[in-house]
Image 1 (cartoon, rainbow, N blue to C red):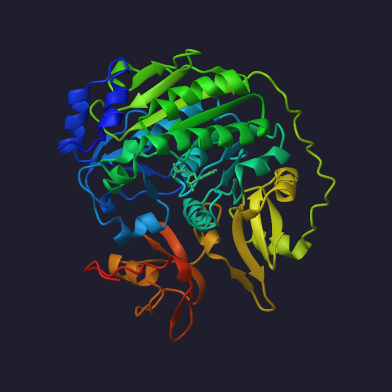
Image 2: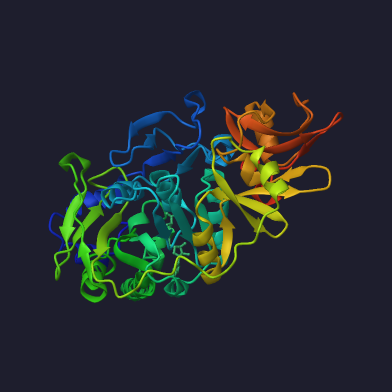
Length: 462
Ligand code: SAM
């Protein structure tokens, strides 16, 4: 029995190169491949890999297939941000970003529909250290997951916001690049999520297509002239893909960007029916991955003036002793600035103060940079994010845990073993920092964030 709605198959017959039988077979029998993307900011101990590695994902430098799906939740390396579990087709954003020049220094890039953070962690890995990623999610509960995943990823050049796309109109011409991984009808993920099949309908495709246009129209003014926009969906529907490419080229005034695609990658290069805009389709019968569509355009007509770089807002001053205290916690080569956040301080790469102030004036920021902690009368109380940051200095007291000890820590249970130091220090698994402990003479205090602890038991129960 076919998993794919007849109306969808019928519509896809109009697409040149669509192989109906192979497509249906891939859905009836094919098992979705499992893939992960390694974090270049962190070590990855191969001997502790969660499952045997297969080949590299052709279009993504750090993407790898796994031979089987492990119980990821019980892998401390995942919680330490050493890798992200990501569907292989989605990793193609990496190739598009590179073609659009996203590796250049000093850029400001927005990921507009970002939760849970797959594309954002990937964008962070492509951007230069002095570029800024604004990772936004409109739904509050999903913004929390996004914040968690980006904190684990560890890059200091990241901001998480929780805003509606229309709020970005206050940031006219601010961004050099925007990624819109749009909410869509989700047909590309039928193999991974068969429940989505029951929710699929032609009406929903039409609604998604209208919403995609609204989102793009709202955010377009925030892109500077000459900037790039990468649009993607996990839908097969022409209305959400080629028609949106046509609509952007027609209504927004952009130029389509072709991507170089080796034939052996199996990606289907398409063109939109009205404006011949370049698009790239992923079909599970042609590639090892799920359904996906991506197109890139550059902004040729600049209706918007770039935003002022001066906000007029004075950045809040930070006491010199706080700078000195934080400096003792960070890698000595890391040039940073500090942002007060309530009683705490966040660390950002130096030189982003104006941009952050401007973003604060326009958006609700859930996170900016790496939360480093706060001073108390006696000592600096470190924040979890600092333990997961590659900017943490390398000679902080540390304790390498066994798998069982690491899981105890990540469940926020009492640590029975004795730490090799007293006072604050980090625990690691396979060389990857997991978080803070404070070791006293008679016990170890576990500072893993309660909201992130593993609740699932080894037998699958909670
Ligand atoms: N980019 C994410 C990743 O790679 O992990 C996946 C994003 S998912 C395809 C689309 C996101 O858009 C969801 O997080 C959803 O909450 C958000 N969304 C839903 N409605 C939206 C709207 N009207 N405007 C902006 N974002 C919306």
